[in-house]
Image (tube, rainbow, N blue to C red; front, side):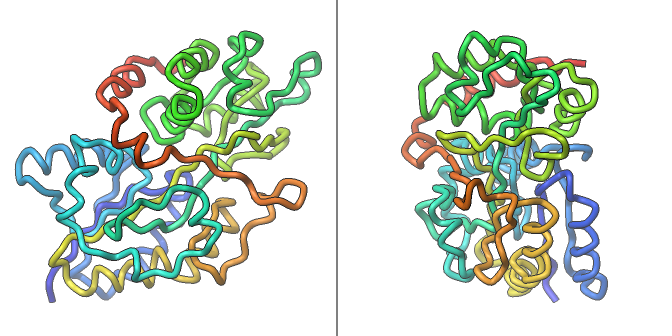
Length: 312
Protein backbone atom coordinates (compact mmCIF):
# COMPACT_ATOMS: atom_id res chain seq x y z
CA UNK A 1 0.00 0.00 0.00
CA UNK A 2 1.36 3.41 -1.01
CA UNK A 3 1.96 5.77 1.89
CA UNK A 4 -0.13 8.94 2.20
CA UNK A 5 1.19 12.05 3.95
CA UNK A 6 -1.35 14.62 5.14
CA UNK A 7 -0.49 18.18 6.16
CA UNK A 8 -3.28 19.19 8.56
CA UNK A 9 -3.83 22.79 9.70
CA UNK A 10 -7.48 23.20 10.64
CA UNK A 11 -9.52 24.72 13.51
CA UNK A 12 -7.05 24.96 16.40
CA UNK A 13 -9.77 25.22 19.06
CA UNK A 14 -11.18 21.89 17.91
CA UNK A 15 -7.90 20.08 17.27
CA UNK A 16 -8.21 17.50 20.04
CA UNK A 17 -11.60 16.34 18.79
CA UNK A 18 -10.35 16.45 15.18
CA UNK A 19 -7.46 14.18 16.12
CA UNK A 20 -9.90 11.71 17.65
CA UNK A 21 -11.77 11.48 14.34
CA UNK A 22 -8.53 11.09 12.42
CA UNK A 23 -7.01 8.54 14.79
CA UNK A 24 -10.13 6.40 14.68
CA UNK A 25 -10.03 6.33 10.88
CA UNK A 26 -6.28 5.71 10.66
CA UNK A 27 -5.83 3.20 13.49
CA UNK A 28 -5.70 0.25 11.07
CA UNK A 29 -4.16 2.19 8.19
CA UNK A 30 -0.41 2.47 8.85
CA UNK A 31 0.07 3.96 5.39
CA UNK A 32 -1.54 7.25 6.52
CA UNK A 33 0.81 9.77 8.13
CA UNK A 34 -0.60 12.98 9.60
CA UNK A 35 1.56 16.03 10.25
CA UNK A 36 -0.16 18.75 12.30
CA UNK A 37 0.55 22.47 11.97
CA UNK A 38 -0.79 25.71 13.41
CA UNK A 39 -1.23 27.23 16.86
CA UNK A 40 0.42 25.22 19.59
CA UNK A 41 2.41 23.17 17.08
CA UNK A 42 6.16 23.47 16.43
CA UNK A 43 5.76 24.81 12.90
CA UNK A 44 3.36 26.84 10.79
CA UNK A 45 2.07 25.26 7.59
CA UNK A 46 3.11 28.27 5.50
CA UNK A 47 6.70 27.75 6.69
CA UNK A 48 6.57 24.03 5.93
CA UNK A 49 5.30 24.71 2.40
CA UNK A 50 8.00 27.34 1.87
CA UNK A 51 10.70 24.89 3.03
CA UNK A 52 9.30 22.13 0.78
CA UNK A 53 9.30 24.42 -2.25
CA UNK A 54 12.85 25.53 -1.60
CA UNK A 55 14.18 22.00 -1.13
CA UNK A 56 11.94 19.92 -3.42
CA UNK A 57 10.04 22.38 -5.66
CA UNK A 58 6.75 20.92 -4.42
CA UNK A 59 4.99 20.17 -1.13
CA UNK A 60 5.97 16.86 0.42
CA UNK A 61 2.35 15.95 1.15
CA UNK A 62 -0.32 14.04 -0.74
CA UNK A 63 -3.12 15.93 0.99
CA UNK A 64 -3.16 19.49 2.32
CA UNK A 65 -5.94 20.60 4.69
CA UNK A 66 -5.48 24.25 5.51
CA UNK A 67 -7.09 27.21 7.25
CA UNK A 68 -3.71 28.93 6.89
CA UNK A 69 -5.01 31.09 4.04
CA UNK A 70 -1.53 32.33 3.08
CA UNK A 71 -0.82 28.89 1.62
CA UNK A 72 -3.29 29.39 -1.23
CA UNK A 73 -3.29 33.22 -1.35
CA UNK A 74 0.42 33.84 -1.78
CA UNK A 75 2.14 33.49 -5.18
CA UNK A 76 5.37 32.72 -3.33
CA UNK A 77 3.65 29.63 -1.94
CA UNK A 78 0.93 27.75 -3.89
CA UNK A 79 -1.30 30.36 -5.56
CA UNK A 80 0.52 30.08 -8.90
CA UNK A 81 1.53 26.44 -8.51
CA UNK A 82 -1.83 24.70 -8.46
CA UNK A 83 -1.07 22.63 -11.58
CA UNK A 84 0.75 20.16 -9.33
CA UNK A 85 -2.60 19.22 -7.75
CA UNK A 86 -5.38 16.99 -9.01
CA UNK A 87 -8.86 18.14 -10.03
CA UNK A 88 -10.84 17.27 -6.91
CA UNK A 89 -13.59 19.87 -6.45
CA UNK A 90 -16.04 17.72 -8.39
CA UNK A 91 -15.47 14.82 -6.00
CA UNK A 92 -17.57 16.50 -3.30
CA UNK A 93 -21.13 17.78 -3.22
CA UNK A 94 -20.90 21.33 -1.87
CA UNK A 95 -24.02 23.04 -0.51
CA UNK A 96 -25.21 26.27 -2.14
CA UNK A 97 -24.71 28.26 1.08
CA UNK A 98 -20.97 27.56 0.88
CA UNK A 99 -20.81 28.46 -2.81
CA UNK A 100 -22.24 31.93 -2.17
CA UNK A 101 -19.68 32.74 0.55
CA UNK A 102 -17.21 33.61 -2.20
CA UNK A 103 -14.58 31.26 -0.79
CA UNK A 104 -14.60 28.73 -3.63
CA UNK A 105 -11.62 29.08 -5.97
CA UNK A 106 -12.15 29.32 -9.75
CA UNK A 107 -10.31 26.04 -10.21
CA UNK A 108 -11.02 22.36 -9.62
CA UNK A 109 -7.73 22.03 -7.74
CA UNK A 110 -9.11 23.21 -4.39
CA UNK A 111 -12.22 22.12 -2.49
CA UNK A 112 -13.88 23.89 0.44
CA UNK A 113 -14.61 21.60 3.40
CA UNK A 114 -16.38 24.21 5.57
CA UNK A 115 -16.36 27.93 6.32
CA UNK A 116 -15.87 29.66 9.68
CA UNK A 117 -17.04 33.29 10.10
CA UNK A 118 -15.38 35.96 12.21
CA UNK A 119 -17.97 37.92 14.23
CA UNK A 120 -18.01 41.11 16.31
CA UNK A 121 -18.83 40.72 20.00
CA UNK A 122 -19.56 43.38 22.60
CA UNK A 123 -19.33 43.24 26.39
CA UNK A 124 -22.49 45.22 27.16
CA UNK A 125 -21.52 45.63 30.81
CA UNK A 126 -18.63 47.95 29.94
CA UNK A 127 -20.02 49.36 26.68
CA UNK A 128 -23.09 51.12 28.08
CA UNK A 129 -22.09 54.58 26.85
CA UNK A 130 -20.72 53.41 23.51
CA UNK A 131 -22.27 53.08 20.08
CA UNK A 132 -22.14 49.43 19.09
CA UNK A 133 -20.34 48.81 15.80
CA UNK A 134 -22.53 47.44 13.03
CA UNK A 135 -19.93 46.85 10.34
CA UNK A 136 -16.23 46.30 9.71
CA UNK A 137 -16.13 49.87 8.41
CA UNK A 138 -17.41 51.11 11.79
CA UNK A 139 -14.40 49.49 13.45
CA UNK A 140 -12.17 51.93 11.55
CA UNK A 141 -13.76 55.01 13.16
CA UNK A 142 -11.77 57.07 15.65
CA UNK A 143 -14.36 56.40 18.37
CA UNK A 144 -13.17 52.79 18.58
CA UNK A 145 -9.52 53.66 19.18
CA UNK A 146 -8.24 51.33 21.88
CA UNK A 147 -11.59 49.56 22.27
CA UNK A 148 -11.07 46.50 20.05
CA UNK A 149 -9.16 43.31 20.76
CA UNK A 150 -8.57 40.26 18.55
CA UNK A 151 -6.05 37.50 18.02
CA UNK A 152 -3.69 36.87 16.46
CA UNK A 153 -1.82 38.90 13.87
CA UNK A 154 0.02 35.85 12.51
CA UNK A 155 -3.08 33.66 12.11
CA UNK A 156 -6.02 33.54 9.71
CA UNK A 157 -8.23 34.81 12.55
CA UNK A 158 -6.39 38.13 12.64
CA UNK A 159 -5.21 38.44 9.06
CA UNK A 160 -8.61 37.73 7.54
CA UNK A 161 -10.06 40.78 9.33
CA UNK A 162 -7.41 43.17 8.07
CA UNK A 163 -7.40 41.76 4.53
CA UNK A 164 -11.22 41.94 4.37
CA UNK A 165 -11.21 45.62 5.35
CA UNK A 166 -8.41 46.28 2.84
CA UNK A 167 -10.44 44.48 0.15
CA UNK A 168 -13.64 46.43 0.84
CA UNK A 169 -12.32 49.88 1.67
CA UNK A 170 -8.65 50.06 0.76
CA UNK A 171 -5.33 50.27 2.56
CA UNK A 172 -6.17 53.53 4.35
CA UNK A 173 -9.07 51.94 6.21
CA UNK A 174 -7.04 48.83 7.01
CA UNK A 175 -4.42 51.06 8.63
CA UNK A 176 -7.12 52.93 10.58
CA UNK A 177 -8.37 49.61 11.90
CA UNK A 178 -4.86 48.61 12.96
CA UNK A 179 -4.53 51.89 14.85
CA UNK A 180 -7.76 51.12 16.73
CA UNK A 181 -7.20 47.45 17.56
CA UNK A 182 -4.99 45.52 19.94
CA UNK A 183 -3.84 42.02 19.03
CA UNK A 184 -3.33 39.23 21.53
CA UNK A 185 -1.79 35.84 20.86
CA UNK A 186 -4.92 33.83 20.00
CA UNK A 187 -8.71 34.35 19.75
CA UNK A 188 -9.34 32.55 23.05
CA UNK A 189 -7.23 35.18 24.83
CA UNK A 190 -9.17 37.93 23.03
CA UNK A 191 -12.41 36.45 24.37
CA UNK A 192 -11.05 36.30 27.92
CA UNK A 193 -9.68 39.85 27.72
CA UNK A 194 -13.10 41.17 26.71
CA UNK A 195 -15.51 38.89 28.59
CA UNK A 196 -13.64 38.09 31.79
CA UNK A 197 -11.00 40.77 32.33
CA UNK A 198 -13.28 43.43 30.79
CA UNK A 199 -10.36 45.37 29.38
CA UNK A 200 -11.93 45.97 25.95
CA UNK A 201 -15.61 46.46 25.12
CA UNK A 202 -15.32 44.96 21.61
CA UNK A 203 -13.66 41.79 20.42
CA UNK A 204 -13.62 39.96 17.10
CA UNK A 205 -13.99 36.21 17.45
CA UNK A 206 -14.42 33.08 15.37
CA UNK A 207 -17.96 31.74 15.57
CA UNK A 208 -16.85 28.88 17.81
CA UNK A 209 -16.10 31.46 20.56
CA UNK A 210 -18.80 34.05 19.86
CA UNK A 211 -21.64 34.65 22.30
CA UNK A 212 -20.86 33.12 25.69
CA UNK A 213 -22.10 36.15 27.61
CA UNK A 214 -21.21 38.66 24.91
CA UNK A 215 -23.55 40.31 22.42
CA UNK A 216 -22.83 38.89 18.97
CA UNK A 217 -23.07 41.24 15.98
CA UNK A 218 -23.06 40.04 12.39
CA UNK A 219 -21.17 42.72 10.38
CA UNK A 220 -23.46 44.34 7.82
CA UNK A 221 -20.68 44.38 5.25
CA UNK A 222 -19.97 40.69 5.81
CA UNK A 223 -18.32 38.39 8.33
CA UNK A 224 -14.74 37.65 7.22
CA UNK A 225 -14.67 34.01 6.20
CA UNK A 226 -12.02 31.44 7.04
CA UNK A 227 -12.51 28.49 4.70
CA UNK A 228 -10.86 25.14 5.20
CA UNK A 229 -9.24 24.41 1.85
CA UNK A 230 -8.24 20.97 0.64
CA UNK A 231 -5.92 19.90 -2.17
CA UNK A 232 -4.58 16.52 -3.32
CA UNK A 233 -1.30 16.06 -5.13
CA UNK A 234 -1.38 14.56 -8.62
CA UNK A 235 -0.42 10.91 -8.44
CA UNK A 236 -1.47 10.52 -4.80
CA UNK A 237 -2.72 7.08 -3.79
CA UNK A 238 -6.46 6.42 -4.05
CA UNK A 239 -6.57 6.34 -0.26
CA UNK A 240 -6.01 10.11 -0.19
CA UNK A 241 -9.51 10.76 -1.53
CA UNK A 242 -10.95 8.04 0.69
CA UNK A 243 -9.46 9.80 3.72
CA UNK A 244 -11.06 13.12 2.79
CA UNK A 245 -14.45 11.67 1.88
CA UNK A 246 -14.68 9.57 5.02
CA UNK A 247 -13.18 11.98 7.55
CA UNK A 248 -13.23 15.70 6.70
CA UNK A 249 -16.19 15.57 4.30
CA UNK A 250 -17.90 12.68 6.08
CA UNK A 251 -21.29 13.12 7.75
CA UNK A 252 -20.02 12.62 11.30
CA UNK A 253 -17.22 15.16 11.16
CA UNK A 254 -19.27 17.68 9.17
CA UNK A 255 -22.01 17.50 11.81
CA UNK A 256 -19.37 18.01 14.50
CA UNK A 257 -18.13 21.21 12.85
CA UNK A 258 -21.67 22.54 12.50
CA UNK A 259 -22.78 21.76 16.03
CA UNK A 260 -19.60 22.32 18.05
CA UNK A 261 -17.89 24.98 15.99
CA UNK A 262 -20.90 26.93 14.68
CA UNK A 263 -19.20 26.49 11.30
CA UNK A 264 -20.92 26.34 7.91
CA UNK A 265 -20.57 22.73 6.69
CA UNK A 266 -20.17 21.83 3.04
CA UNK A 267 -22.23 18.65 3.26
CA UNK A 268 -25.76 19.52 2.06
CA UNK A 269 -27.40 17.00 4.40
CA UNK A 270 -25.99 18.54 7.59
CA UNK A 271 -28.17 21.11 9.34
CA UNK A 272 -26.69 24.59 9.58
CA UNK A 273 -26.28 25.73 13.18
CA UNK A 274 -28.92 28.21 14.42
CA UNK A 275 -25.96 30.27 15.65
CA UNK A 276 -25.27 31.33 12.07
CA UNK A 277 -28.69 32.93 11.67
CA UNK A 278 -29.58 36.51 12.55
CA UNK A 279 -33.30 37.41 12.48
CA UNK A 280 -33.97 34.34 10.36
CA UNK A 281 -31.26 35.12 7.79
CA UNK A 282 -27.99 33.22 7.52
CA UNK A 283 -24.81 35.13 8.25
CA UNK A 284 -23.44 37.09 5.31
CA UNK A 285 -19.89 35.90 4.64
CA UNK A 286 -17.07 37.98 3.17
CA UNK A 287 -14.02 36.77 1.26
CA UNK A 288 -11.78 38.75 -1.13
CA UNK A 289 -12.42 37.85 -4.75
CA UNK A 290 -9.82 35.99 -6.78
CA UNK A 291 -8.78 39.03 -8.80
CA UNK A 292 -7.98 40.92 -5.58
CA UNK A 293 -5.96 38.01 -4.22
CA UNK A 294 -4.03 37.60 -7.48
CA UNK A 295 -2.98 41.26 -7.44
CA UNK A 296 -2.59 41.79 -3.70
CA UNK A 297 0.90 42.72 -2.47
CA UNK A 298 1.27 39.81 -0.07
CA UNK A 299 4.88 40.66 0.80
CA UNK A 300 3.80 44.13 1.96
CA UNK A 301 0.86 42.66 3.88
CA UNK A 302 3.14 40.13 5.58
CA UNK A 303 5.49 42.93 6.56
CA UNK A 304 2.68 44.89 8.19
CA UNK A 305 1.15 41.95 10.03
CA UNK A 306 4.47 40.42 11.09
CA UNK A 307 5.52 43.72 12.66
CA UNK A 308 2.59 43.70 15.11
CA UNK A 309 3.50 42.68 18.63
CA UNK A 310 0.88 40.76 20.56
CA UNK A 311 -0.38 42.44 23.72
CA UNK A 312 0.75 40.60 26.84
